Length: 214
Image (cartoon, rainbow, N blue to C red):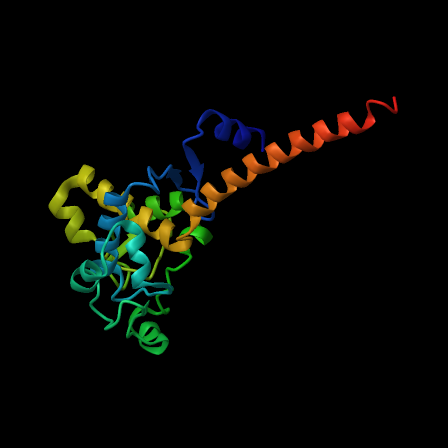
């Protein structure tokens, strides 16, 4: 336990992956980077949405990323007809289990359940393994049923470029997990400021009320 605490203290950018014991690099995401979020959305619909849905996310919420409904309809909608629809997939649970052994999970809240660092490490640690059904394995999630969906992107762009693609994808999945996170934080700051002002006014009133009684 003492060694573990020391490791966490002296290596704050690295956490141990639960179960696999593989180190997790901090995901360099930026929730306010609209270009990154738009890039992540493109990667998601092109490489993930075939198997993984995001059933709690509606396409028209992507206007938060600086996209128009026309851009969403023309570039990001391949399995839906209306921008108000959720990001569902045609694959059934039965088909997913038959093809992969387990049905691919919905990714609506995966960033909240797994964490951005876990996703960032997971997507960057696939390796060839002839002993698995898919021909791939993963250092963070050993014996995963998921094949390396982004292997062509990784092979064609190099390590540095692939890290950017993964960063953008994870950034987008974090947004999907809580689309209103930034506005919630902004509102929280305003609320704290208002509470601070009210506290000072209440304190001043208290002082004025008790000054003659003392």
